[in-house]
Amino acid sequence: MATAPPRPATDDFLRRYRKRGLEGLPKYAQLREALCAAIHAGHWERGARLPSDSDLTGFTGYSLGTVQRALRELADAGVVVRNQGSGTYVSDGGGAIDAPLHLRFRGSTDGEPAFLPLYPKVLSRTRAHGSGAWSDWLRPEETSDIVRIDRQLSVNGEFIVFNRFYFDAREFPDIAACPLATLDGANLKQLLGEAVSMPISDVEQHVSFVSFDAAACKAMGVKPGTRGLLLESAAAAGRGNPIYFLESYIPPNDRRLDVSALR
Image (cartoon, rainbow, N blue to C red; front, side, top):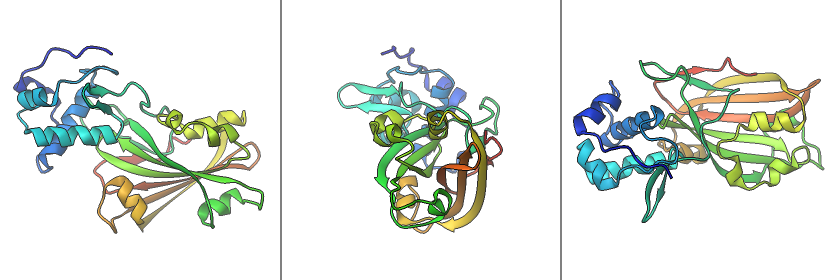
């Protein structure tokens, strides 16, 4: 593991990495954003061990409980890994998804990238039953074996987008059976396109304003009944050959959503 840089002074660290305009957020959220900004700026490299919880308390000026909650949220988002007895490390696996993407969120302040990184975490892989928009697109037959992968996408460590990704396991047996951990950080759109040796040639996208179901609310950490955007992405390769269907649940946030980068 890479070693951590020298411990900065409180004023230096917060002056460099605390974001403006977040004063109304809880303290743990302000600290989470500062730590995330430091990681993305390269203050701690991938695999580097962060200072201990008590050291972070000392040089950030936040309480131990605030520090621990901020780190817990970064761990849930896949930005850091917390090992009991060893410490907290910047994630060196399952990094940000590579382009092309169905949805991107634009940076809005100096020092931010043009588009914010998305950090995926696979929650489950199950067989899909019943019907819905996904079945209208994939047109499953009696012999079809439709798989659904549920994921959290941490947007720059700020908020969570919840994904439901549908595809036919008969067409993509390796992806349907591979260890779930290998899909963290993977661009599923790209993987399926590579598996059929054809680029994704046609994408239909539809946006609606909906009330999130209980599972989506839990995955995003929002209150039950929260309303937000549902982005449905239906993709085909070759001559109209349906490949997958993707549901992205996007909670209320202050970022600008860009859905133009589809290919």
